[in-house]
Length: 318
Image 1 (cartoon, rainbow, N blue to C red):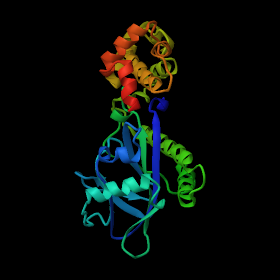
Image 2 (cartoon, rainbow, N blue to C red):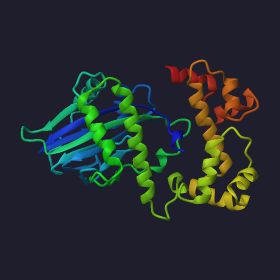
Image 3 (cartoon, rainbow, N blue to C red):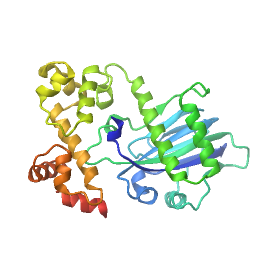
Image 4 (spheres, rainbow, N blue to C red):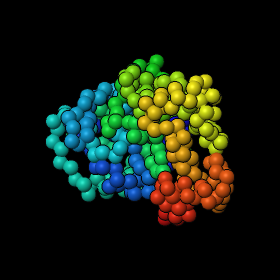
Protein backbone atom coordinates (compact mmCIF):
# COMPACT_ATOMS: atom_id res chain seq x y z
CA UNK A 1 0.00 0.00 0.00
CA UNK A 2 2.99 2.30 0.39
CA UNK A 3 3.17 2.25 -3.42
CA UNK A 4 0.44 4.88 -3.21
CA UNK A 5 3.16 7.36 -2.19
CA UNK A 6 5.03 7.95 -5.44
CA UNK A 7 8.65 8.74 -4.59
CA UNK A 8 10.17 10.90 -7.30
CA UNK A 9 13.85 11.31 -6.45
CA UNK A 10 16.36 11.71 -3.65
CA UNK A 11 19.51 13.50 -2.55
CA UNK A 12 21.81 11.89 0.02
CA UNK A 13 25.10 12.95 1.57
CA UNK A 14 27.22 12.07 4.58
CA UNK A 15 28.08 14.49 7.41
CA UNK A 16 31.14 14.16 9.67
CA UNK A 17 30.75 16.53 12.61
CA UNK A 18 33.20 17.62 15.32
CA UNK A 19 31.88 19.22 18.53
CA UNK A 20 30.69 21.94 18.73
CA UNK A 21 28.63 21.89 15.55
CA UNK A 22 25.24 22.80 14.13
CA UNK A 23 23.59 21.59 10.93
CA UNK A 24 20.27 23.06 9.92
CA UNK A 25 17.80 23.39 7.06
CA UNK A 26 15.08 25.99 6.40
CA UNK A 27 11.59 24.99 5.31
CA UNK A 28 11.98 22.65 2.37
CA UNK A 29 9.66 24.72 0.16
CA UNK A 30 12.42 27.37 0.08
CA UNK A 31 14.93 25.06 -1.63
CA UNK A 32 12.80 22.27 -3.12
CA UNK A 33 13.17 23.70 -6.64
CA UNK A 34 16.96 23.56 -6.22
CA UNK A 35 17.17 19.98 -4.97
CA UNK A 36 14.38 18.10 -6.78
CA UNK A 37 12.52 20.51 -9.07
CA UNK A 38 10.15 17.81 -10.36
CA UNK A 39 8.97 16.84 -6.87
CA UNK A 40 5.80 18.23 -5.32
CA UNK A 41 7.13 17.85 -1.78
CA UNK A 42 10.37 17.06 0.08
CA UNK A 43 10.69 14.74 3.06
CA UNK A 44 13.85 15.27 5.12
CA UNK A 45 15.44 12.37 6.98
CA UNK A 46 18.64 11.75 8.93
CA UNK A 47 20.27 8.60 10.25
CA UNK A 48 22.88 8.81 13.00
CA UNK A 49 25.53 6.25 12.07
CA UNK A 50 28.11 7.07 14.74
CA UNK A 51 28.13 9.04 17.98
CA UNK A 52 25.17 11.06 19.20
CA UNK A 53 23.61 14.51 18.83
CA UNK A 54 20.50 16.56 19.45
CA UNK A 55 17.84 17.44 16.93
CA UNK A 56 14.58 19.36 16.81
CA UNK A 57 12.24 21.58 14.86
CA UNK A 58 13.15 25.26 14.74
CA UNK A 59 10.27 26.11 17.10
CA UNK A 60 10.59 23.13 19.48
CA UNK A 61 13.05 21.81 22.09
CA UNK A 62 15.67 19.29 20.92
CA UNK A 63 15.59 15.53 21.34
CA UNK A 64 18.57 13.22 21.88
CA UNK A 65 19.59 10.99 18.98
CA UNK A 66 21.88 7.98 19.37
CA UNK A 67 23.69 5.84 16.80
CA UNK A 68 21.12 3.96 14.71
CA UNK A 69 18.32 6.46 15.33
CA UNK A 70 16.39 7.84 12.37
CA UNK A 71 14.88 11.32 12.27
CA UNK A 72 12.21 12.17 9.68
CA UNK A 73 10.71 15.62 9.01
CA UNK A 74 7.69 14.71 6.84
CA UNK A 75 6.01 18.10 6.39
CA UNK A 76 8.89 20.35 5.35
CA UNK A 77 9.46 22.19 8.64
CA UNK A 78 12.73 24.00 9.40
CA UNK A 79 14.90 21.96 11.77
CA UNK A 80 18.42 21.53 13.14
CA UNK A 81 20.88 18.96 14.46
CA UNK A 82 23.57 19.99 16.94
CA UNK A 83 26.05 18.95 19.61
CA UNK A 84 25.88 20.27 22.25
CA UNK A 85 22.18 21.18 22.15
CA UNK A 86 22.97 24.73 23.24
CA UNK A 87 25.47 25.28 20.42
CA UNK A 88 25.08 28.73 18.91
CA UNK A 89 22.71 28.67 15.95
CA UNK A 90 23.44 31.48 13.52
CA UNK A 91 21.39 30.51 10.54
CA UNK A 92 22.38 31.93 7.16
CA UNK A 93 19.44 31.49 4.79
CA UNK A 94 21.31 32.38 1.60
CA UNK A 95 24.26 30.21 2.62
CA UNK A 96 21.88 27.28 3.08
CA UNK A 97 20.36 27.78 -0.36
CA UNK A 98 23.80 27.98 -1.93
CA UNK A 99 24.82 24.75 -0.19
CA UNK A 100 21.77 22.83 -1.43
CA UNK A 101 22.16 24.24 -4.96
CA UNK A 102 25.79 23.12 -5.15
CA UNK A 103 25.10 19.73 -3.56
CA UNK A 104 22.28 19.00 -6.01
CA UNK A 105 24.51 20.04 -8.93
CA UNK A 106 27.28 17.68 -7.84
CA UNK A 107 29.69 20.52 -7.09
CA UNK A 108 30.30 19.35 -3.51
CA UNK A 109 31.75 16.08 -2.24
CA UNK A 110 29.31 13.52 -0.87
CA UNK A 111 30.91 13.84 2.58
CA UNK A 112 30.48 17.19 4.36
CA UNK A 113 32.47 18.27 7.42
CA UNK A 114 30.84 20.38 10.14
CA UNK A 115 32.19 22.00 13.31
CA UNK A 116 35.72 22.61 14.54
CA UNK A 117 39.12 21.15 13.70
CA UNK A 118 38.95 18.33 16.23
CA UNK A 119 38.19 14.69 15.46
CA UNK A 120 34.72 13.93 14.09
CA UNK A 121 32.63 12.49 16.90
CA UNK A 122 29.31 12.22 15.10
CA UNK A 123 28.46 10.87 11.68
CA UNK A 124 25.04 10.91 10.06
CA UNK A 125 23.38 10.47 6.70
CA UNK A 126 21.42 13.49 5.52
CA UNK A 127 18.73 12.85 2.95
CA UNK A 128 15.87 14.48 1.06
CA UNK A 129 13.21 12.41 -0.64
CA UNK A 130 10.78 13.79 -3.20
CA UNK A 131 7.18 12.61 -3.28
CA UNK A 132 3.75 13.49 -4.64
CA UNK A 133 1.13 15.06 -2.38
CA UNK A 134 -1.55 15.93 -4.93
CA UNK A 135 -4.21 14.97 -5.74
CA UNK A 136 -4.16 12.58 -2.75
CA UNK A 137 -1.51 11.24 -0.41
CA UNK A 138 -2.91 9.30 2.57
CA UNK A 139 0.44 8.65 4.25
CA UNK A 140 1.89 12.12 4.90
CA UNK A 141 -1.09 13.56 6.84
CA UNK A 142 -0.87 10.53 9.16
CA UNK A 143 2.69 11.40 10.20
CA UNK A 144 3.74 13.84 12.97
CA UNK A 145 5.81 16.95 12.27
CA UNK A 146 8.89 15.21 13.65
CA UNK A 147 9.22 11.44 13.62
CA UNK A 148 12.04 9.73 15.51
CA UNK A 149 12.47 5.99 15.20
CA UNK A 150 14.85 4.24 17.54
CA UNK A 151 16.66 1.23 16.11
CA UNK A 152 19.18 -1.16 17.53
CA UNK A 153 22.70 -0.24 16.48
CA UNK A 154 23.90 -3.84 16.62
CA UNK A 155 24.14 -5.92 13.46
CA UNK A 156 21.08 -7.95 14.39
CA UNK A 157 18.78 -5.07 13.58
CA UNK A 158 17.41 -5.37 10.05
CA UNK A 159 18.09 -1.72 9.23
CA UNK A 160 21.80 -1.89 10.11
CA UNK A 161 23.01 -3.57 6.88
CA UNK A 162 21.11 -1.04 4.77
CA UNK A 163 22.62 1.86 6.73
CA UNK A 164 26.11 0.39 6.35
CA UNK A 165 25.56 -0.02 2.62
CA UNK A 166 24.35 3.58 2.34
CA UNK A 167 27.48 4.89 4.09
CA UNK A 168 29.72 2.84 1.80
CA UNK A 169 27.87 4.00 -1.31
CA UNK A 170 28.14 7.65 -0.29
CA UNK A 171 31.87 7.34 0.35
CA UNK A 172 32.78 5.52 -2.86
CA UNK A 173 30.67 7.45 -5.42
CA UNK A 174 30.35 4.53 -7.82
CA UNK A 175 28.62 4.59 -11.22
CA UNK A 176 24.84 4.41 -11.12
CA UNK A 177 24.88 6.22 -7.80
CA UNK A 178 21.70 8.27 -8.37
CA UNK A 179 19.56 5.19 -8.98
CA UNK A 180 21.08 3.41 -5.99
CA UNK A 181 20.49 6.44 -3.75
CA UNK A 182 16.82 6.61 -4.73
CA UNK A 183 16.30 2.92 -3.99
CA UNK A 184 18.14 3.23 -0.67
CA UNK A 185 16.05 6.25 0.29
CA UNK A 186 12.84 4.39 -0.61
CA UNK A 187 13.84 1.37 1.47
CA UNK A 188 14.83 3.51 4.44
CA UNK A 189 11.58 5.48 4.30
CA UNK A 190 9.38 2.39 4.03
CA UNK A 191 11.21 0.70 6.90
CA UNK A 192 10.85 3.76 9.11
CA UNK A 193 7.10 3.92 8.38
CA UNK A 194 6.75 0.24 9.26
CA UNK A 195 8.59 0.76 12.54
CA UNK A 196 6.49 3.80 13.37
CA UNK A 197 3.33 1.81 12.63
CA UNK A 198 4.43 -0.87 15.10
CA UNK A 199 4.75 1.71 17.89
CA UNK A 200 1.35 3.39 17.45
CA UNK A 201 -0.84 3.19 20.57
CA UNK A 202 -4.05 1.18 20.28
CA UNK A 203 -6.32 4.22 20.59
CA UNK A 204 -4.64 6.07 17.72
CA UNK A 205 -6.76 6.78 14.61
CA UNK A 206 -5.76 7.74 11.08
CA UNK A 207 -4.65 6.03 7.90
CA UNK A 208 -1.63 4.29 9.42
CA UNK A 209 -3.58 3.24 12.51
CA UNK A 210 -6.21 1.79 10.18
CA UNK A 211 -3.60 -0.62 8.84
CA UNK A 212 -3.46 -2.20 12.29
CA UNK A 213 -7.19 -2.87 12.34
CA UNK A 214 -7.73 -6.21 10.53
CA UNK A 215 -11.04 -5.20 8.95
CA UNK A 216 -9.98 -1.73 7.81
CA UNK A 217 -6.65 -3.09 6.57
CA UNK A 218 -8.44 -5.69 4.43
CA UNK A 219 -10.73 -3.05 2.95
CA UNK A 220 -7.84 -0.71 2.19
CA UNK A 221 -5.84 -3.52 0.60
CA UNK A 222 -8.78 -4.48 -1.60
CA UNK A 223 -9.28 -0.91 -2.80
CA UNK A 224 -5.59 -0.32 -3.47
CA UNK A 225 -5.21 -3.65 -5.22
CA UNK A 226 -8.09 -3.04 -7.67
CA UNK A 227 -9.06 0.65 -7.67
CA UNK A 228 -10.69 0.42 -11.12
CA UNK A 229 -13.12 -2.28 -10.04
CA UNK A 230 -16.80 -1.33 -9.93
CA UNK A 231 -16.87 -1.24 -6.14
CA UNK A 232 -19.96 -0.68 -4.03
CA UNK A 233 -20.08 -0.64 -0.25
CA UNK A 234 -21.93 -3.98 -0.34
CA UNK A 235 -19.31 -5.58 -2.59
CA UNK A 236 -16.42 -4.27 -0.50
CA UNK A 237 -18.02 -5.45 2.74
CA UNK A 238 -18.63 -8.90 1.28
CA UNK A 239 -15.01 -9.20 0.14
CA UNK A 240 -13.80 -7.99 3.54
CA UNK A 241 -16.02 -10.54 5.31
CA UNK A 242 -18.31 -8.20 7.22
CA UNK A 243 -21.57 -6.24 6.95
CA UNK A 244 -21.77 -2.87 5.24
CA UNK A 245 -22.75 -1.13 8.49
CA UNK A 246 -19.78 -2.54 10.41
CA UNK A 247 -17.39 -1.70 7.58
CA UNK A 248 -18.71 1.84 7.28
CA UNK A 249 -18.38 2.40 11.04
CA UNK A 250 -14.86 0.95 11.36
CA UNK A 251 -13.57 2.59 8.18
CA UNK A 252 -14.98 5.98 9.15
CA UNK A 253 -13.57 5.70 12.68
CA UNK A 254 -10.00 5.16 11.50
CA UNK A 255 -9.82 6.80 8.08
CA UNK A 256 -12.20 9.68 8.76
CA UNK A 257 -14.32 9.25 5.63
CA UNK A 258 -16.56 6.63 3.97
CA UNK A 259 -14.90 3.89 1.88
CA UNK A 260 -16.37 5.08 -1.42
CA UNK A 261 -15.14 8.62 -0.90
CA UNK A 262 -11.71 7.26 -0.11
CA UNK A 263 -11.83 5.20 -3.31
CA UNK A 264 -12.70 8.32 -5.31
CA UNK A 265 -9.63 10.13 -3.95
CA UNK A 266 -7.44 7.11 -4.58
CA UNK A 267 -8.60 6.96 -8.19
CA UNK A 268 -7.82 10.66 -8.67
CA UNK A 269 -4.33 10.13 -7.26
CA UNK A 270 -3.68 7.31 -9.70
CA UNK A 271 -5.16 9.36 -12.53
CA UNK A 272 -2.90 12.30 -11.71
CA UNK A 273 0.12 10.02 -11.96
CA UNK A 274 -1.02 8.53 -15.28
CA UNK A 275 -1.78 11.95 -16.76
CA UNK A 276 1.81 12.99 -16.11
CA UNK A 277 3.07 10.24 -18.41
CA UNK A 278 3.94 11.21 -21.96
CA UNK A 279 1.29 10.33 -24.50
CA UNK A 280 -1.36 9.26 -21.98
CA UNK A 281 -4.82 9.93 -23.41
CA UNK A 282 -7.53 11.16 -21.04
CA UNK A 283 -9.97 8.49 -22.22
CA UNK A 284 -7.41 5.76 -21.48
CA UNK A 285 -6.69 7.22 -18.03
CA UNK A 286 -10.41 7.35 -17.31
CA UNK A 287 -10.80 3.66 -18.12
CA UNK A 288 -7.71 2.75 -16.12
CA UNK A 289 -9.18 4.21 -12.92
CA UNK A 290 -12.68 2.80 -13.31
CA UNK A 291 -14.71 5.38 -15.27
CA UNK A 292 -16.88 4.33 -18.19
CA UNK A 293 -16.76 7.71 -19.92
CA UNK A 294 -14.20 10.45 -20.38
CA UNK A 295 -16.77 13.11 -19.51
CA UNK A 296 -17.66 11.53 -16.15
CA UNK A 297 -13.98 11.18 -15.29
CA UNK A 298 -13.20 14.77 -16.26
CA UNK A 299 -16.03 16.08 -14.06
CA UNK A 300 -14.91 13.96 -11.11
CA UNK A 301 -11.26 14.93 -11.55
CA UNK A 302 -12.00 18.66 -11.66
CA UNK A 303 -14.31 18.38 -8.65
CA UNK A 304 -11.59 16.67 -6.63
CA UNK A 305 -8.48 18.46 -7.87
CA UNK A 306 -9.82 21.84 -8.99
CA UNK A 307 -8.34 21.44 -12.48
CA UNK A 308 -9.40 19.62 -15.61
CA UNK A 309 -7.24 16.62 -16.62
CA UNK A 310 -5.67 18.63 -19.46
CA UNK A 311 -4.91 21.58 -17.16
CA UNK A 312 -3.36 19.21 -14.62
CA UNK A 313 -1.17 17.68 -17.30
CA UNK A 314 0.00 21.09 -18.56
CA UNK A 315 0.90 22.33 -15.08
CA UNK A 316 2.80 19.16 -14.24
CA UNK A 317 4.76 19.55 -17.44
CA UNK A 318 5.84 23.13 -16.74
